[in-house]
Length: 135
Image (cartoon, rainbow, N blue to C red; front, side):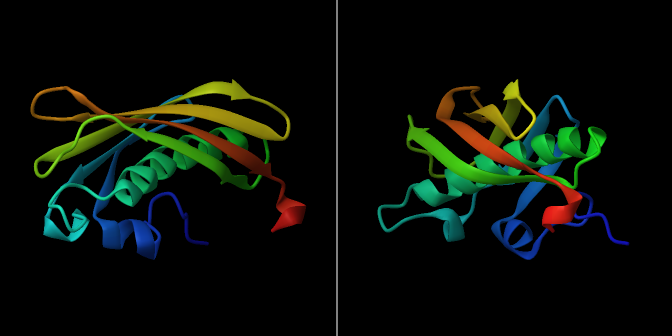
C-alpha cells in the first residue's frame, strides 16, 4: 500500500511544495517561488499561502491521528492572513498543534521568507480526524 505522506498528492507536487520535516508534533514545508505562483500584480497569490499552510498542518495532523489508530486527518477550515507581499525566494511554513482532540485538531502555521526570516503569512487550520470506517 502506498503511503500518501511520502508520495506527494498531485496538487501539492504541482505547486512545488516539499516537506522538509514531518512529525506528529511539527511539520515544515518549503516552496521555491516562481512566476507560476504569482497573481497578476507580480506577488505570490493568496491561494499559494493557503495551500502551503494546509499541506504542513494536514501532514502533521494526519501523522498524529494515525499514531492514535485513526486513518488520518482532513482540513475543514483554513484561515490565512497575508502579512507581507513576496515575489521571489523561498517560503517556509512551520505547523504546530494548538489542540488535538478526539474528533478535531487545530494547528497554527507561520510562513516566513527564508532569506530574511520575516513573516509573510500566518494561518489557523482546523482538521477533522478520520476514522478507518469513514474512508
